[in-house]
Length: 262
Image (cartoon, rainbow, N blue to C red; front, side):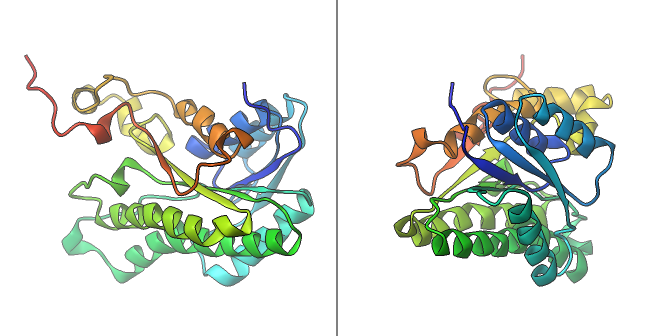
């Protein structure tokens, strides 16, 4: 029901998972999209095809955001603007889980997690914010967090810390950029079906049942459930929404503990 015609978005990490669902939802709402991934493989080509089926422009830009920030972020920014000169939406979705048990964590793995999940998004937002302010563009930024930004898991220390940082980044950048006509919000999925949650798909019924038990609506949905919320948060309908983290989690974050199973 929300129309994004006339807008253009870069969605990082959008060849699969939540990023793919968001890119396709934007295209369905009428926005031109720039897809991003490490390389133009089969999955990225499928996303481009699905987006273009909605009669919008869809381009691909490569870049490994887990590498050193400055050259990769700058090249990605320039490539996205070249593909869509009027780009006014940035979705910082690229992220990954690299964890090992806490006592085995290395500075390399911890740094890689923070680089991809936090640092690259911070400086990519900086590039776009400076460009938008210089060109009097009302920008919209959406950070993709996680339920892990609010609720911890024992073998997820680096990932949990990074997603907690994303939650604060949404708030501090919203406060900083709102006076400059740039809106910043976030969206945090609970457990949804993506390539990263293959342990659910690939036949682990006991663990899947545990997840359902801890989810008030008892669902483990496809990542597509994230699309409509992502469309809303960058739309004109959300013009007075700043610094908000929208939980797409079936109620997990609202529940102190589940009832004991029968």
